[in-house]
Amino acid sequence: MIAKGTVINGDVKFEGGLLVEGTIRGNVRAEDGSEALLRLSEAGQIEGEIHVPNVVVNGKVNGDVHSSAHVELAAKAVVNGNVHYNLIEMVMGAEVNGSLVHSQQKPASSEVPISFDKKAKKEDKAPSLDAKMETKQSPA
Image (tube, rainbow, N blue to C red; front, side):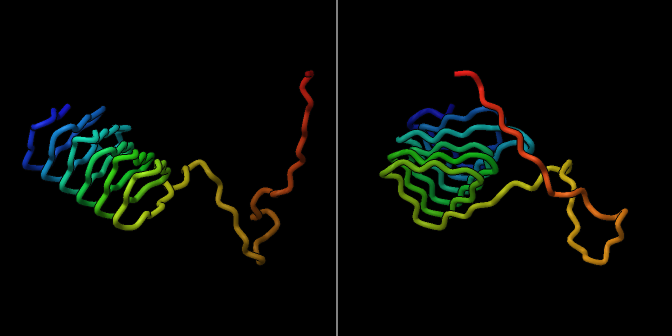
């Protein structure tokens, strides 16, 4: 936690959870591969870029926000910069002075690529996309 009235001049790198009620003048970054959560309270302010998977903003951000998972912009949120997100929640009253940029996560490596090459041999073809749908009624 960075308490109200505290000012940090420099970048902050963390993992787990970080609650900011003070001011950070620098970039905020989560450890790579973590599911970190940054909460910026109504009194909090960040002057720099944010690179955190899960972000909840209710204060002021002067810089871009980069989130690979979830961004929540609460009623008192003010972001002067672009918001890069995968999933976003925005409450009435939140303000973004920049662009909202949707970025999907990379597909899982377990997915099988499907070839649409018309010249493919029969044994090289991808599995058929035809599937039967079965529905069952549950007793009411």
